[in-house]
Image (cartoon, rainbow, N blue to C red; front, side, top):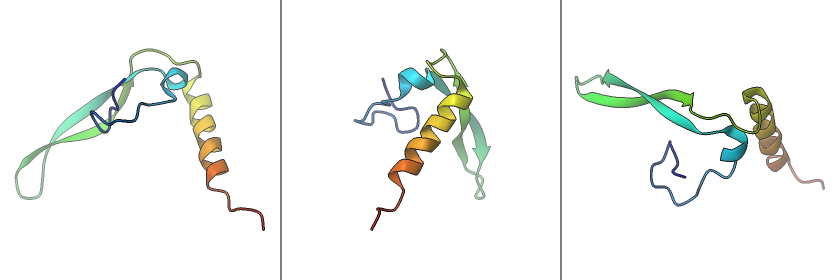
Length: 73
C-alpha cells in the first residue's frame, strides 16, 4: 500500500486495516506570485476499515498520548 501524503514512501500505513482505504482530495490553487499549485485538502473513504472513524481517531489519540507521556522518575 502506498502512502497518500508521501507517495512512494518506504514505510507502509500500518493501521490501514483499522482505518480503511482512503483516496486523497486535491484542489488547484494560485499562489501569491500567480503560479499554480495543487494542494491536498482532505481524504475520501474508499473502503471501510475495521473501526468507525470516531473509534479510529480515539485509538490514534490514545497511541500518541501513550508515546508522548513523560517517563516516571
